[in-house]
Image (tube, rainbow, N blue to C red):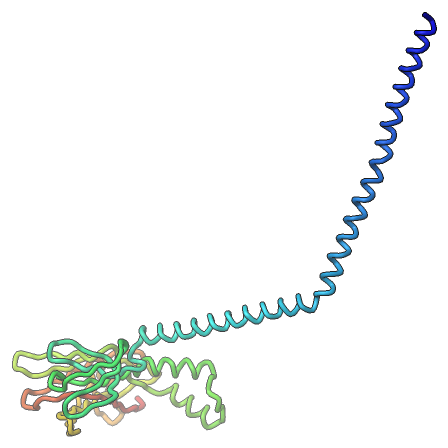
Length: 287
């Protein structure tokens, strides 16, 4: 009986020792596996670095090509923006390039530039393209002069010092010009018919200079036919009354930055005309 118990105890101890030995073997084997995995990861990273270093010139060249493409696209967009700004300026002020107003017998007006004409037709370049108009439908051709805008632009250029020639003579001329009168048309010239069938042209003139303009007048040159015949009429501009040292008085003086008006009555007997241009004239006196 005692032998049986001793035998059972021996078996249990043997099994216990065997199980403990298996666990120790597993525990001692696991660090070897982790070391192998770490070694493989390190080798992989070293391989990646070597590949990048080997292909570095190709990578730099690819990046340089991408930069060139982006720069070309940026230049293209900048060019498109410049064209858009130029078109915006044209639509905002069409008189900058189209200074002719063609009045038709149906009451409509076409603003453009005359590129061709003969005895039968007239070709007009406009913002929407070229138009061919029968001369029999044209009532009048008016020359629109944007002198106000030109004077402002010229003044801004002088103030910014944009002139490349800064010699003493030019500086004196600029100084004299800045101390002079300068009359320009403000807005458009209005054309109406009075009760007697006369044609009345009216408008406003502004002195954008720095001195008083005296004996101010506007001179109209009317084109009476397509052969080039013309007639001239003059209208004085209504301003303030001024008496000079000689004792002569004039009510056609316009002070700096002031506005005067004019009215030109073209009698019915003057005859028809197909167009006109104008020139503003004035004198400058002290006192």
